[in-house]
Length: 194
Length: 123
Image (cartoon, rainbow over all chains, first blue to last red; front, side, top):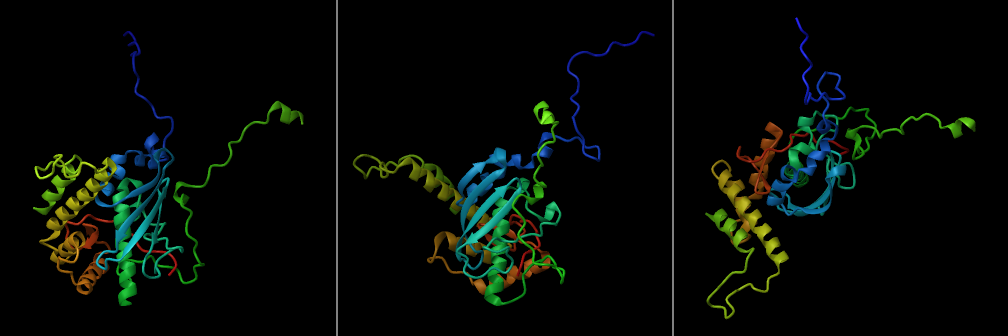
């Protein structure tokens, strides 16, 4: 029986690398913050509902900065959200809030989720800017309610171990992993000679 | 419907408005394009807020009233913040999350869901 000739033409593209579980590693997997580049899905809903004043938008680098004047739900106090996003990590700071914050990393930076929680309990860029603003609005209501009524926090709180040392605010790009070290290269002939 | 008024106004304000009562034909001929764009965005937000107020009105009449009050100000009856705050806080304690409509929290299931995070950080 004659061997069949190998088929010529376009061959299916094989990914160069794989995750441990065998799932193909795509460019989109390696650069989740690039979803911000698709403005339609990232910020358009928010622009239609809030007075978003964009300060910096460099989606290819995963950076985004904006100021959003809002009113605290139910109580109606006016304040401004300062939003900074860097490669998928969001930092939301409130300016002009009428009282001291209960859950904060300091400098009025809102602490809306536990950084060690799974993605469905944290904000991620695929949820869009609107979800970030509105999650911050719920947090502002909770802060104001505690200050006005003196009641316990209305909602879930992440438990702190009693002997836990004072925790610093995570750096804005902690979740994207440690900074890449300098590539290792072979010494040049000049270096060898020295 | 109010949201339809805002919706049409958001489009109409992008171009000069004619009027037979004005000698040169336009009531806003001297308005700059950037100002028109800014006002159109405000009207678009008002259209979205009023549409959301109508959507949540059946399940959360107090929430809808708050949205209308934010849009129209004092001529509209001011909602009772104390009772509403207790209602929303109770929802947050029981479910861990609340919906958003018209820039405020709502107890209506028609509100947009938010991230159900656990508040953290130093107290």
